[in-house]
Each structure stands twice: as structure tokens, then as C-alpha cells.
Amino acid sequence: LNFGAVRLPCVPPCHQCTSATMPGVSRAAIVLSLLPLSSSLSFVRPSLFSRTSARAMSTSLDDDAQNEPEQSTSPPPEPRKSHCTTVCVVPPPSATVAWEALTRARLELRDPGFFRWPPHANLLYPFLELKSMKKRREVSSEAEDCPLIDDDMLDALERVGAKCHPFKVTISELGIFGNKNRGVLWAYPRSYAVGEKTGTEHGTPFCHRDEPMIQLQASLEAEFPTCTEQRKSRSFHPHITLSHYASIEDALSAKEQIETWWTPIQYTASEIYVLRRVGDEGQFEIAATVSLGMGQSPVTDDKALPSQSLVQIHDPPISFPDMPETEEEWVHEERMKLKARRNSSWKTRRRKRAGRKRRNGRNKERIPDAPEIIAQKRAERKAKREALAAQADAEDVDAATSKS
Image (cartoon, rainbow, N blue to C red; front, side):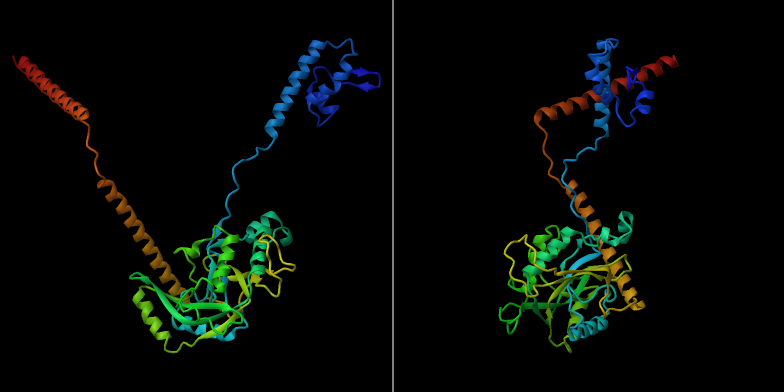
């Protein structure tokens, strides 16, 4: 329709008018824009115009409602954990005496994790999954647009680093744990505050709750409350694994062997590490270095951040200088033996659990039936017997009749 210098769409608006005259505008918008003119146009039937406007507006609102994304009211999923990431204490590369002693022990004990792991004490393991290179490429081609460690994790690590301070570590005691099917030989990294003369005045052989490393682990767990695996026995027991064995007797023999030459070693832990490995054949590398304290003023607010960054992100991750560059054949063989033992133990535990479930199902205490139910079952069995007897008699009569 042409009305002077103004071109109006058809009423009711057709597809050609809405697309050619006002592209991208819904029919409802066009009709609503014409409402002020409808009263002054005598040739437009008000009833037709009102019916058309209502129908078009309803259709447009329905379409808009369908196009709007649904808002999910469910809580966000928990971050995934991975056995390919860990937060741990490792002797710094400058602690050459500690690295040499621990490396010698692990080589002599044929540690299956000699290539994969540095000498370490896990604080949070498994830890939250870091972004893989493949996922980061899918998001953006620029590393700055999709960092290896997100802001929330970075802020939490910053708070822990500002709250805790460097501490001394002494490794003088060895221990074992396991059973007849598994054995682990480990070294105890006793920690104490810088300035203490020794770390043994507490009078306990292992793991006093006031030790800085135990307090550090508690601070980390408070920031990452889903990572509680290092506290399976309700308390954290720091340890550095030296090797794995098929039984606790083998681990005890290895402990006696190492104790013939082991001497206490010391180093200062002024930083902790976020480590990550890629794939089953990968080596744990440094994804982030978290400095402890570094002269910062005490942080009283749990959510406050230090004045300068305490976390250094390594993207791509880097290896420790004294770690082997390739996995030797004997290390791979020992790692495959350990993996086979773990798989066999897992299958055995699964069979035992299934057997217990079956036995528990058979041995459940039977609840006796009520007298009314017993009488009903007896009547049903009696009626069944009588029906079978009557059927047999009828078959005998039919057979006799057919013979005669």
C-alpha cells in the first residue's frame, strides 16, 4: 500500500512485504508500528487489523520464546580431577645433595617411577585437570586467550603462597607400608620452621600436626576442597616414595639395604610445584611454581591476594634439570610389572566384592510368612493337586471309551 510518501506493508502483512520492505523485523513489530495509523485510515477494517495484529504478535512471541536459550538452574559441575596433575614438594634444583642421595636410592632400588616422577611428596594428588593443548587450540590459537591455569586456580595458589612461609626439610627416617601383595618403601620428609635448631624436638617419630608441610597441605585442601585423597586416614602423612615392591617383606629387605649407607639430608623448601604429565608414557613437568611467603606481609583475609605475584606459570611446562630425558628399558619393565600387579589386585578385589554380595544375598534372614499367607499357599497347592488328579481321571476315561 502507498499512502502519500509513506509506503505501508500489506494488511495482513505478507512475506514479500515483510522481507522486502523491512528485513529483519517481525510481523508483530510491523503491525504494532501501524496501530497509531489504523485509527486515521478509514479503508482499513479495525476488526481485521486487530485480529491480524493479535495473531502476528502471538506468533512472534512464541518464536522469540523458542529461540531464547534455556537458563539452567542446576549447580555447575565440579571441576574434574586427574592423576596426570599434582601439587607437591620437590627438592629445589639447587639442593644438589638431596637430589644425588634420593636419585642414588631410587636407582639402587629400581624404582618403577624413576622416569615419570621426580623425588616428591604429594600435597594434593590427584589434582584438578589442567587444560590440554588440544582443548586450548579448539578455543583459540593464541595461548594468552586460553591459559594453561585459569584465574580461579591461580588466585587460590596465590593465597596459599602468601599464607605459608619457607621451611626446612630433613630426610633421615625410612618407612614401609603395604601387605602380602604390595609393599612401598618411603622416606619421611620431616619439616620445621626456619630458625628451629632441629625438627625432632616434638618427640614423635612421624607427622606432627604443627609441621609446616602439614599446615601447607591443610591450606591447599581448604582452597581445593574436592582434593582430599592425601588424607585417606583422616590425617596427612607426607612421604617420598623410593620404590614399589610385590610384598611388604620385599620392602622391608630393601629398607635394611638402604639404611646401611643412608645419612640425613636437608634442604629448604621455598616453593612448591604444580606438575603435569601427558599420556601414560609422559613425565611429570613443572606447570607452575608457587613461591612461599618471600617476605610478604602476613595475609589476614583469606580472600586477599599478595601485593606481587607468587605463581610463575610455565607454558609449555618444563622438566627438572636432573630428571632423565628418556625412559630406560629397565625402568619401563619395572613400571609394566607394577601396572600388572595393580591390575591383578584390582581384579581380585572386584571378584571378592562380587562374592560377598552373592553370599550376603543368600544368607539374608528370611522373614516368616503370616498364618493367613501360609493357609492361602496350602489351599492353592491343594487345588492344583486336585485339578491335576481330575485331569488324569478324565484322560483315563477318554482312553477307555476310545478302546471300546
